Length: 343
Ligand SMILES: C[S@@+](CC[C@H](N)C(=O)[O-])C[C@H]1O[C@@H](n2cnc3c(N)ncnc32)[C@H](O)[C@@H]1O
Image (tube, rainbow, N blue to C red; front, side, top):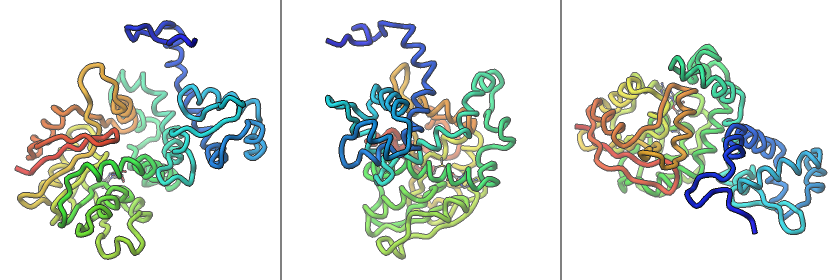
């Protein structure tokens, strides 16, 4: 019988293996990137395949591929069956390029040099503060993306991919009104707005962002015709007026407190009395409780000098910009919804 890698107290039995597993965590991300790069999940869509079959159809080296898949199977991505063939797991299903909630683009973004180089500089970032991205690439992330179309596409593809499943979960949990207008500030390609408009047929929407994600928005087609518009702009200057609900999803976590207050004040100026603000981000649990947001937080630190926040930190930030936090709603995905009203 297999022995648990942990003692009943939760402490790992083999501390060396545990720490070295953590130290070599970048190898899991490299293995994941390899599987996406060679579209392994697509080739398992019809059922289990031997490594030799997979290597034949993907033009890869079978012994190496076997070792990558064996490594990923230890984390629940792919599974070796009793006959020695590999099959998809629920996690691996999301690595199919044709899945509606495909995470392929998100994996390619998260494992790109753009972010790997940034996180490799973390010891220096912690010594001096600030975002290592800026020293390495010579400009803050969003400025860099405006001057590098290929990096911008990688980022926008990646964000849309991370959001594919999350947007449905958020739209289901958000208290959108039956009618009125939602303004999605920094809404990217509009996945959340699309999910909200689909759920509420009387709702209209404004997708507000920089030009590149708007050029590839997801709102087209007959289904939502006449119910949305896009507007390009800078949320530090102003955001569209006249909305009943304003959404900031994965926007505040990109910034330290002072720029966040400027974004929030732009929203405050645009909002009529009675309109609501929905901030969609991780809400960090206190203490040692695990939460994906605690990993995302150090990514935000390195890339943008941004941060994930606790409920208390959100309340203080919102209050400094003239809002009152009214409630925090969980979703079935990792972000929560922090609801506020303008005072
Ligand atoms: C992390 S992405 C989140 C996108 C989307 N809300 C989502 O959850 O998928 C942050 C967004 O903020 C936008 N953004 C950054 N700086 C901006 C600015 N000054 N004015 C307007 N949008 C900006 C980016 O273009 C990007 O789409």
